[in-house]
Length: 136
Image 1 (cartoon, rainbow, N blue to C red):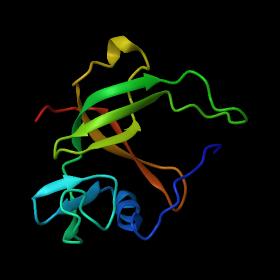
Image 2 (image 1 turned 180 degrees about the vertical axis):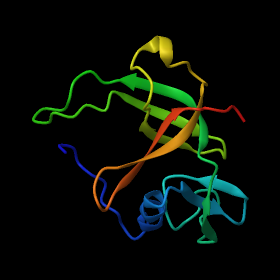
Image 3 (image 1 turned 90 degrees about the horizontal axis):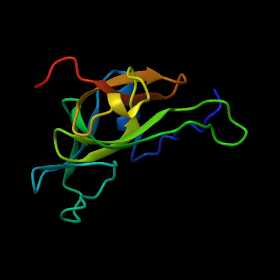
Image 4 (image 1 turned 30 degrees about the vertical axis):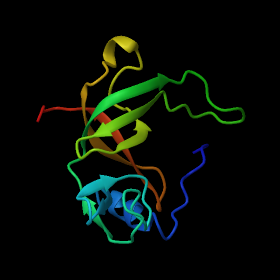
């Protein structure tokens, strides 16, 4: 493997641990009833620590993407489709799109997606997204 792996922090440990178990878990503000991502201990809506982790559906829609045709210098791994996914619960998440050809004809904006999990090391399992097999 020739790419920089994420390094879990105290704030993100639950996210990575749950991904290893095949669950997509993000932060939820108890004061506003709104989800948020990236993981952090303070709500971006209220500035309070009245937050908790919640497992979400893993469904979303393709908001934007770029097709990467070249690896970074010194690396031989290409993640061809880098995307911004609008999660069903509200927040957006940067991820990769898998199980689809990296061609614009196959990447329709607003297409339904669902999470998949790819183990890339003993410590890290990445949430990635694929075209949804069933539309909710």
